[in-house]
Amino acid sequence: QQQVKQSPQSLIVQKGGISIINCAYENTAFDYFPWYQQFPGKGPALLIAIRPDVSEKKEGRFTISFNKSAKQFSLHIMDSQPGDSATYFCAASGGSGNTGKLIFGQGTTLQVKP
Amino acid sequence: ETGVTQSPTHLIKTRGQQVTLRCSSQSGHNTVSWYQQALGQGPQFIFQYYREEENGRGNFPPRFSGLQFPNYSSELNVNALELDDSALYLCASSSTSRDEQFFGPGTRLTVL
Image (cartoon, rainbow over all chains, first blue to last red):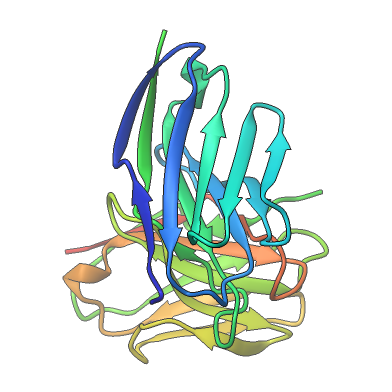
């Protein structure tokens, strides 16, 4: 019940295309859902985050879509660029005993071809 | 504004030894969380410190311990190192225990 399942494991997109990464969770007490971007040899960088009171949040080319009833959320990267090539992690936290404890998905390696 | 910093960058130890990793939180942040990231995996929560007290712990044995100092910097100590402890150790800081967490660059620990 504490898991966050992320798919796909890897993704190849052409420059200018849309990259979509999906995550699913089981613990309905989760109330915070961030996405992180990680380049090789670096720490994860916070991209965008959402709480369950909204169904969508957009920041620049990055959009989170959130479906509370399905217990799923996704990251959409519009107009994908080669510089977006990195590993992306979804995460979740919240509920009794889980405050501040981020539970991460397994990651998606994105390659954007020029 | 200074971001999260960690030291050292890389470390090589042998099985059975002890190691101390250090983290300085971002300016204005009073909460520090530690994560272990094995190669090709997502980070796993070790524990969190808030106002110098442990505020939550993941599924890690007691040989993983920590400290937070009055300036909110933190240490992660690992005793009796095992080969499986080889990983990237990440520190993240936040304004409170519930807020956005910002990660440092990590310490790459190799246990031989």
